[in-house]
Image 1 (cartoon, rainbow, N blue to C red):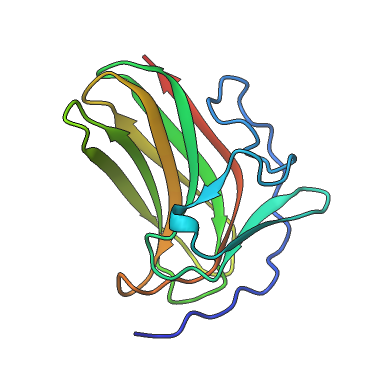
Image 2 (cartoon, one colour):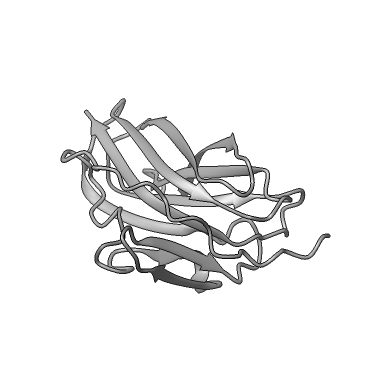
Length: 168
């Protein structure tokens, strides 16, 4: 397994106006890491401040070490959630960005819907995942991360301009 390459400071991402109907607040990290968490507490998450703040996630222990956002509300069967984010990694072994939506089914089992998109190292890439809920739920967790050549590979990455739109 290759060793992750530390992420040098990326160019500052383009500031974007996030949609008012987004079910995610603080997707521009203007309020630091408020509302955001790390999967299993792995790694270190911090906000790089500047003209346009962004989140830096370093020291992950595998590709399931993701940045998470829990959202509560009334989400109905066949409701659609579209998640968009700008993601950056300087590590050439990071090949894909992954967006997951998790929910708990009627049996109490956590289910994960996932989509991944190829990204180019060394530049900010906009990625989108579109998900249709199979049941009514009152909470979803949006997870955003990267994937490398193996499950235990975990390159550092940065996020900005994260939003999600829900359509019942």
